Structure formats: structure tokens, C-alpha cells
Image (cartoon, rainbow, N blue to C red; front, side, top):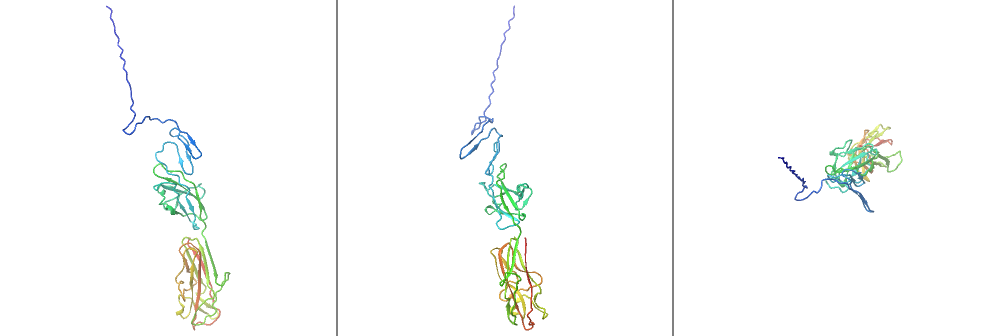
Length: 350
């Protein structure tokens, strides 16, 4: 009896489904990044779009820097050129005011400086001096860089042209390129000093006591006029010295001693007093003690330099008038060859 076989084919059908990521707030339809991007322009704008995710060129101008790819943070604005000046003929500092370029107050700025057109670059530190390296401590906010009043970059070289440029950062990964360059120059240290008298502006200068009768105080017939202009930041002084520490007569072998005193109450003596002191700007200059007395009070002259006029800062157009006064008594020999030679010296602190 033949045997019969029956075959059964079972077909299994399996379907795979992927769920689209979603939440109660969003549904993400796809994960991929497609190509795209392009550019468009008109007479008033130029628009650039990204192609792919991370390709394309960096686009810059004086106001921005745009890079391809997805930005994780918003970049700070590139700072415009700062205000960079030498307002008072400085020889070792220059003034800088940061331009914020629309950045918020939390933005910090780094300042690069160079005296060779950025062949060599140095950086302004938080103490306003210049260093060779840039660290995070050298980034400061607009207010710490002096705000609208700015600040002085210190420790610069005299008679040198400097260029500065600034970059900004406002959080991680937001640092800009450096902005436009600004230029300013220091000058050389300088002192301009002149001496004249109320009778003559041309040397040699003479001031005579035409008569010295005993018992009265007399002023010389000419006052010394001292003129000073200097950019010395820490000021200085005009010094006086004389040859004999008094009025000396060779014929009589006698010296009317120079002294610090009120001549109206002494027997005899000789000295100097500053009767006026002024300046156009800076300073101020002022008479030094004991040459600042009034009436017949004088300060002693000596063979060593004595400060007669002082200033604690730079000064322009300064003028001081120095008067010589003397008195004799019956013990002073009468002769016409009493003489003294005064020397005025200006010395400044740079």
C-alpha cells in the first residue's frame, strides 16, 4: 500500500517598527543632517547660509566673525578700535579707553600691544603694565579697564609709537578675533628752564644793591625770573646756590653773611625770597621753605644747592620771581665791591 506524505509550509511574517523620539513638548521627525545653505544679497544686506554641518569659510568684517557649524554659545561682539591717546605729553604711559561694541557688562576684554606693528605682541596685564604672556587674569571687564574714563598703560618706552587691539569674551567658547588697531606715541622726557631778570632777558644778568646805608633793608634793583616747563611725572625742584654764602668784599676782607631771618629785626644779613609763583597748567609750583616768607623775611643762600621752588608733578608755563634783600649795620665796612654770584639749577624726577 503506497505511503502518502503531506508537506506544510508555515510562513512567519515579522514587522519591525521604530518609534520617533517625542515628549509632551516635541516630536523629532528625523535625526540626519542634510545638505543645504546658500547666499542671498540685496543693496542693503548680504546673507550667508551654512552648507552641511561643519564646512564652509569663516566670514569676518570689522564688526563680526561668523564661523560654520552649529554654535554652542553666542559669540561676543568684536570690539571696535579703542580710543588711544597721549593727553599730556607722557613719556612712559598712554591712555586707553575700551570700546565695548554693544557687548553686555559681563564681557571681558584682552588688550594686545606692540611697538613693531605686531611682529612682536605683548599684552596689558590687570595692573596696567605690559607682559609677554596672556593669561585669563589679564581679561577684565569694561569697568575694571576704567570704564568711560579709561586707564593708563604703564611702563612704556619714551619716544615710541605703540599699536593696540582688543578682543572680547563673554562665557565659554565665545571669544572673538582681535578688533581694529589704534595708534598712539610716547614722547621724550623734557625740561625747559630759563633765567632772566626784570631788567634784562639776555645774559650776563646783574642785580645790584646801589646803596646799603646802615639800619635799613634794601632790595636789589632787579629780581630773578625763573621759567620752567617739564613733563616729569613726579615733578622736581629749582635749586639755588651762591659763591660766598653772603656778600663778600675783597677790599674790606669782610662778608655780609647770608642767613634765614627777618631782616627788619637783625643787625645785618642777606638772603632771598620768592615773591610770586604761578603756572599755566599742571604743578603747581610753590616756594620752598625758608624762601616763602613775606615782608623782609629771607632764606639763606649757601654754596651747596638749596631747593627754592618745588613741584610734585609735571608743569607747563611755570614762572617764579626771586628777590634779593640785604641789610647792614654800623659794624659793616663801607666799600663798593660787595659781590655774590648766584646759580639756579632745575632738576626733575622722571
